[in-house]
Length: 509
Image 1 (cartoon, rainbow, N blue to C red):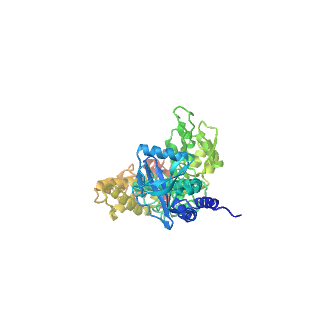
Image 2 (image 1 turned 90 degrees about the vertical axis):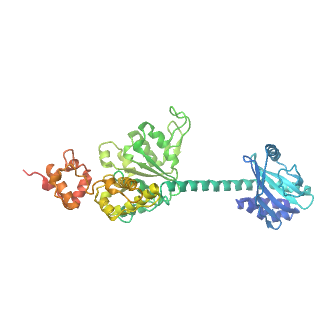
C-alpha cells in the first residue's frame, strides 16, 4: 500500500528517533526527506535550560547538510522565559518572521526570515523549540510540521538523557580518580605486592575462585592483608564493575547490626525517620566484604544464613521480601572450628561462608616479601609526607627482615611511615622507628642466658630456654608461648623452622 508523503515522513521521523540517541544525527537523516516536501532553508533544534534561563542550539541542518552551531545561545529574562514556556505548553506550531524584536527564539544575527516555530514538549515538560526556516510562505507547511513535533520531542528527550548520563559518568570517573589518588593507587585492581613470591599460592587460589560466585572465607592474622585479597577477588570477578563494600562486623553495635546489614523502614524504631537501605541492598550486583564475621551475634547469624541460602531478606520493621544479588567474601582471624565447637558460631553458617577458604600466611612466614613491601610503603609515604619518594637501604632491609612483625603488613606500613616522618624526606630512620636491630620479642628471657651470635642462634637459644622452663609445654597459661609473649602458632612455626622438638624438654619420670 502506497502511503501519502506526509504519512511516510512521520513514519520516517519515528524510525530515525528509534535509530539515533543523538538528535543531531536524527535531524541530519530526516532533513533531506523534509526538504522534498517543504521549501526549507534550514532546520534548527533549540533546547531550553529553564534553571539557567537560556536557549541553546543543539542541532542545525540545511538542505545540503549539518551546519556548525557555534555558540548559539540566547539568554532570557524572567518575562521572556515565562512567555516561552506558556506558549510551548499550548502545543501548537505557528508561522512568523524571524528577527522581530518580540521573537525570543531568534538569534541576534537572524535576518527577517519566514519560519515555523514548533514547541517540543513531552509529558508536560517543555524541552525546546523546533525552528524550520522556509523560502516562502510557511503557512502551507504548518500542518506537516505540527505532525513532526511529537517524534522530535521524543528525540530531544533521548538526547538530553544521553548527555545527562555522560555527565554523570564523567562525574563518577572524576570521583574515582580522586579516591584512587587519596589511596595512592593507579587502579582499584593494582597488583598485589608479593603476589609472585610469598603470596603466590594465595593468588593462585584467588584466580581459581574469582570467576565464580562462590562465597569465600579469607583466614589470616590481624593486619595480614585480608581486605587486599578480598578486593583482588572482586577485581577479577564478573562483578568488578559493581560496588565493593566493606563491613566490619565487630565494629557495629549488636542492636544496630540488623539495620546496618538489611536496612530499616521508616518508623521501625525511634530515630528511623526515613527508609534506609542496608549493606546488602547497597552492594547489589557487587561484592560485600564481611570483615571479622566471627563477631556476628547469634540473631544476625540466623538472618545471614537466609540471605546466603536464597538471596532474600526483610528490612527491620518491614514486611516486603527484598532480593539482593551479592557475592559474599568473609574474613576472620579467629579459629572458626573452635567457635563452632563452643557453640559461638552457627555450624550451618560456617559451612555456607567457607565454601572456598583462602589461608593468608602471616608476614613472618613470607620474609622474602618484605623488601618489595618496604619499597612500596616507603615510596607512598615519602610522596605523601614530603613530596619525594624514599627508598629503603640494604641496612634498612636487613633490619626489617630481622623483625618478627606480630602486627603483620599493617605494622610494617606504620613503621615505614613513622621512619619516613623521622627521616625528614632524606630517607628512612628505621633505627629510631623500629628500635634495636635485634628483635625484642624474647625480652622476658634473661640476656645472660642467651649466647650472643647470629639471629638464628639467638632465637634457638631463647626458645629452648623457654621450653626448658615450661617443661616442653607450648600453649596455655604456663606455656612457652605465654612466657615469650608470642602467639602459640607463631612459636610452633618458628620451632619447626629451627628444628626444635618440644618433646626433648619434657621431664621424664
